[in-house]
Picture (tube, rainbow, N blue to C red):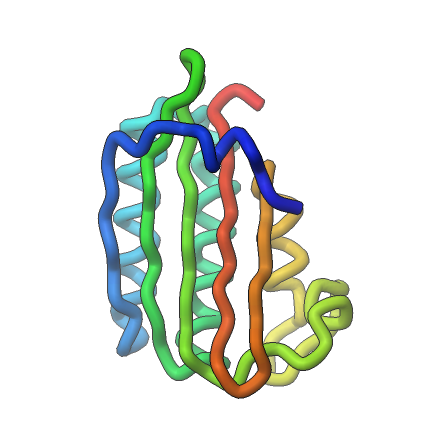
Length: 144
């Protein structure tokens, strides 16, 4: 699921946003939208990235008790993209396969968050340790 390209890419811009209260979710969406504009994503890809960021940040807020969203602007061989790193220190995910399946939820949502975010991005990594938290790294390249 990981991306060697994203690991090799140069980071040209980084912002970190804390998700502590519900209003922080709106701040994250606005920051990601602005970053997609700077990268030059199409309107469809802007929507994909903002939606993925919103789902991941909301999961960190609801299930992880808050966390951080790091937005990295990437360049590699003439390509530009964004990498979202969403971290929390919540209870972690016991069954990652189930959590990535559509319809799985431990809350009141529809259960499309993690799986949907994975489909919206080019690369998706999920790292979790039950009792210690979860980190999701999701990358989208412009024009792909």
